Amino acid sequence: MNYATLVTLVQQYCESTEQSFVANIPTFVQLAEERIYNSVQLPAIRRNQIGTLSINNKYLTLPSDWLATFSLSVIDPVTGSQEFLLDKDVNFVRQSYPSPTDTGTPKYYAIFDDNTFVLGPTPDAAYQVEMHYYYYPESIVTAGTSWLGDNFENVLLYGTLREAYTYLKGEADMMQYYEQKYQEAIQQLTDRKSTRLNSSHVSES
Image (tube, rainbow, N blue to C red; front, side, top):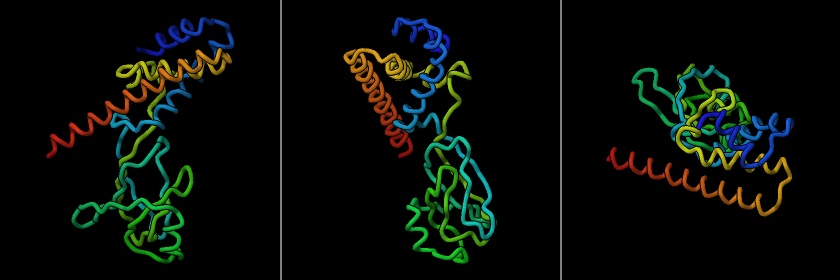
């Protein structure tokens, strides 16, 4: 299902072609996409990035499309081996390394704010790091197609209908119906993710 088809279906299901409603369909779709990606972390929306830490700077800027972290590792400059950092909260990092001059090879990271990790201890060298993370893909609104539209159109459709019907202040029973259909689609998507992960673990073993 591409974006044009999705727009047509939303108008048909909601029985509305009113100008302001149609103008808001892109917002309904993007809200649905955000909700879906925050609910299910899909292997299809995972990527990696290599960067370099700054000496004596305990902060690491996150990628602009970052959604959630899968792993973060420091690359040994001599052997090339990777040492995976442990995910902690900010209080743990600050209590363990209270001074910015507590330097060494980072062992821990924590989410400091929406755009930054704080590391502990503070890097004592310009280490390379590799981050595997979940990201927000380009919306079907601007791309025209998406992984969800191509592979799991029901969750995208019912997620969008849920947002659209909320905008219309529709009847409670229909709101409940679209919410139920959305939850069923999310569960199917979650089950599919679990099946794929289990299959990959079996093949690796």
